[in-house]
Image (tube, rainbow, N blue to C red):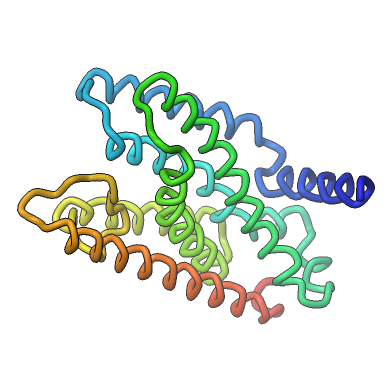
Length: 233
């Protein structure tokens, strides 16, 4: 068991280095600096903290963490001449990119867990795991969407531009769709006025179902695209 766990750790460590192009420390520092910047701005503009504020503070560092791995993952494999090797492995699309997808989300969860504790001790007391459970819905959806787009565009810079544009569109519509089930950035911890609790809980439930189903469809379509080896090598 010890040898198996050690092998699993080494495998995860190697893939994390590949996912973040051996620049994981820089991403980690950038996330913490970005989180500190958000905290500073929030303290200046709105010193009254609640769970809805914490939710927004955790979503954007999470998106920053998954942006590079999802947009540039396939291009990094192409640049490092690993695509041909990966395509030569049976069921490669499940053994490599799916594992990397899960690892990326796992790394994001761990870092967000640390950031959640920092916010919990310094800003506002809240239940960390339920909060992170809600934060992961938009992060997983946008991760799946970025992964799918990367299999269609097959270029890191092009994927990054499209992901930024799509994310910006979602962000623009998050205000008019603030309490709509179709809002990608729906904040389940906000307290809408003139709306019964039952209706609000129904909207949250529908929103989470929509995000979950969309995430699965995007991920499956991305994996399906990776079956066509000749389009990538």
